[in-house]
Figure 1: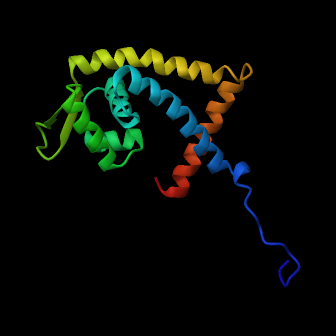
Figure 2: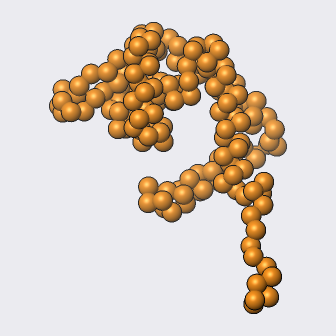
Figure 3: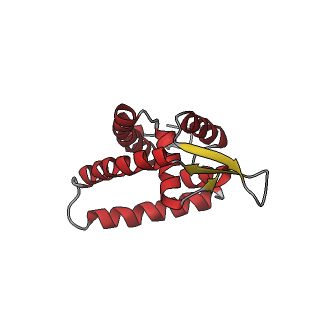
Length: 155
């Protein structure tokens, strides 16, 4: 107890929401990453870049950073490995030569299309733990928390 008669606050890490969300995210990502790596030789950052390109089409490196919530160095390294494996190409934007645009190659698109069902199966298996209606509630709650986190961080 302090001089004023109150105990110092303590942190029960196992009940701390940011910690729990991080552990869940890491556990799920690691399980999925094993499949990406074992079946396709990809890391999580490489798959995230491919997933964004597969969903939104050719994109600038800066937008890839924003869409994947990964830093510039991580995206750059992932892009370099994907280029080395012939899965994406990188070229200068015709309107702004400083801007680099990445796009999936035919081989990259083929691998992307094979991974999507694997990723969706992982999601279905995880969501199978929830009762009917809970998945929609979880989605709404995650969106609210993401919005709030954006406000708190100025993002």
